Image (cartoon, rainbow, N blue to C red; front, top):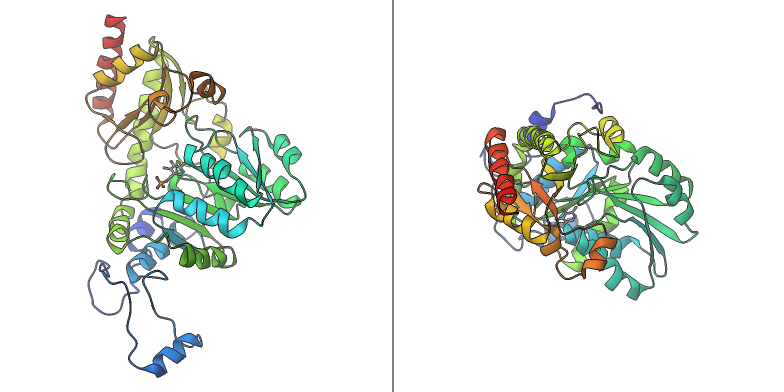
Length: 399
Ligand SMILES: *Cc1c(COP(=O)(O)O)cnc(C)c1O
């Protein structure tokens, strides 16, 4: 398992990181600063602020003390110098691409990737003349071949969605950096508890904080982390593009983060137990979970990750209708998009995230009719397994 630097443990950082810097009150919790702007006592204070002699907040789009606390806590967690919070995970990705990709530059991404990110690249980045090459997640040789003189960024998820491929980041970073290409990792499926991409040499890490970081299916937010130098142009860009989070969501995120390492332990335990159960079940064709020896990236995952999370992807031994009957028969999971929250969620990519594609287009992306993505929450594993067992039996009876 991946080792960690010295210092406070994950749970201590989770509870205390970033929060003791608000001076106005002695509240133990960080207040929700419900304000859009901040006042100056006089023109002298304003001048000193503009000259950089004092640091303070000015206007809500540039900073709010509640979200600054979240940024500090996340820095502590991820081992980053700087962080910037966004209104959503998509906002983090799109703001960074707009901030960092020069006109007519080139981007390399991996094939297994959040659908909307791919859509942004196809529909919007092409307008700026940015070309994109798509490579197989596991193949650093393809990465080397794809890089051109004008390549600015290699972007990948790790683990990926929905097949949970784990990138050998040390190798990828070596290849990219040798050619002057920045490495950006969407680490949403791992969370900083299970994987710290910056520690493996990545230049930037993003998370959809909507998922594990918030953890309670009750907020939307995103975050980017990296060195002070790497984050500076991104902070500037969010001030221009305006995709900032609000103080209430920031507070919910701060509160959710305090239990992140506890939750990740249970998500990972449930994920592994459920994956093992499904792998043995005769009505399940195949299971993808990086903690199973059968997963193509099992060895890489063991080397780079501390745990494997709650998401388990599998194929039911049934057609589209049979798979629908299976998810309908599940009693604990909600049929819903998203992942990483305390409630178990189940989805069928063929009729959810990839609904608008033809069956042929779906197959090209490896999305079959019987594919199911389960995000195990923090319920008791024996209840989850018993529920899946009765739902699979229901498919068997009606087949
Ligand atoms: C959900 C998700 C996103 C988008 O995040 P939002 O907070 O929904 O905007 C991006 N990447 C991955 C891997 C995700 O799971």
